Length: 620
Image (tube, rainbow, N blue to C red; front, side, top):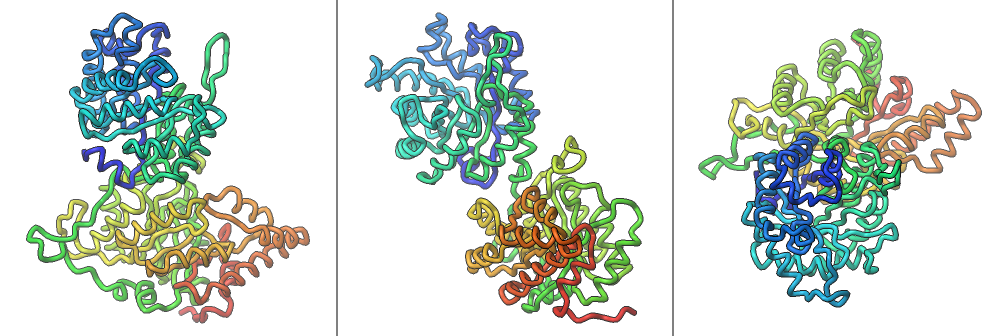
């Protein structure tokens, strides 16, 4: 496992655990007990909580030492046990963590007021922090996390104390109220600026409020610091139910906000009061499609250091007709079809024959789009190439296969003559009819692009040669209308570095958005094939705008579809085709090709978009 300082620098989103106190209380430990002392008195309970969080998907465990400083332990008369409590806490967390999960030494507030708000001197506060941090360091933590601090001056002393004894990474987290301010009136901007100057490696927020309030605060923090951001919200605000304080935010609610927080720039995500392993599991399922669990790195040189590893990849123009056209700057055309729901492919084959007869270059075969149950994309692609004689662009996603399975699949694809790939992360199962189905997501599209690049050079996952290289054309997906375009461009840049040779976009309805996107990526010199979707009706436009992630339909297009659809169903479809043709005409000279979707399997509508653009063939 890499050092945590490397984890801070990589592209992975890391998931912390959830609340320890909530879980201990649920196991029957009264709130008037010292939860930190349980490390010595009832270690099996603490260990089991840690294990539950690891099973749920946590990648960083916090030690059960939130209040294990001399000041707080003194109230229970056990301050002399401070070192043993902290050492044992690290031991328990490490036992649950194994070799694949980080252990963070948790340090909470002292519980006293320091100058100028109270009698405790800054140096005295620093010594309290130093004592606890030294024990945690000696126990062998991977990093420190200073959390739930309200006073910036106090957390600054914690930072100074840790820096005096070691160089381990420090996550510094403050807590805010519903007004977005600390109890001392400090804004998220002030928090970020001061913690940045104080030397925190990661800056963040935790406790007190739920994810909605933190979302706005994170946006403010990210505007003033380049440091990575952490966020561990409560499961909403507590309510009194039957005399008990209950946290009402469901695991599903926390999972939805997890994705929003990531898009705002959060790299380290977890839960605080009220969150449980169930919350963390749902958050892990939400985070996994956005972040690979590992990154494959292309091996640039062999052991001698003189030659590139593996074989020389085949020239793009020799791999397929699709690759030849892209390599020579010829405009490529493809239609995205919908694989059949049942085992009979005849209707699909008949419709694809019409696509070939119309002169379209290829058929785009999606891989379980929107996590729906349909015929497998590899089988569909082989059927179409063998029975229709048209090239396919095969979507291949990370959702359903582990690394070994993907490697085997891709070798099989190569043997079957499937050359053109669109490598995507894949829609999570929650979008489909079986939301409880599991997903794999060993890697995301970036890691998969790395893998296919290696295979084109005759190398397996470990960089070991397996002989002749595969001959895949490497395509990736991109969303020009992403809400956080900087994030999307960062991922696209990584895909290009990994070996992407062209990109196909999400359906584009706003040409201005596409043109701005093309301007932003000019330096990448990556051929872009925009997706175009002929809308069927105003209702279809509403669905695309509101329920398809990453797609936005402009108000002007929505209004045109509304007016046309009110006249009749046929008017609506004609208007959808007209809008699609206008889009294609406008972008024709700016892109490498176009992918037109066949909405609900309506290949005839997709072909109407191409009228006059492609030369029709006569079937043999």
